[in-house]
Image (cartoon, rainbow, N blue to C red; front, top):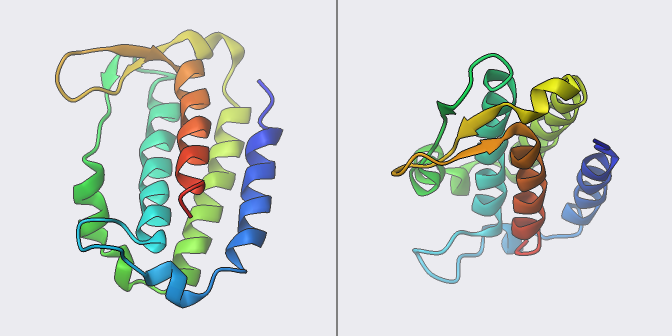
Length: 143
């Protein structure tokens, strides 16, 4: 797999982030909706969960690795963390993902992980990596 696309996304978004004001980062359209800071925090949480999946799935088949995204964002209180700290966390986590997935042996890409909260449903590591990139791009559009 070619992970240059993820490297490009990281670099392009970091430049784009610099043009967003602190007010825009912190603005919430309603108490229930995430601000741009919280969306980026959610992407950090997603990166943390997926690093775990990318490593564990290489040695443990069908492990159940899920997280409650709303709880994580609330528990980590991204709204009150300096935006630059969230940028840096997001940047370093995603560069670690690139490094991790570039080092996954091809034969491990067909190993599986369960990412569901209720009914077990397993996905290949290759699918989870592609899904991570799709998920990342989806949320970046909201920033």
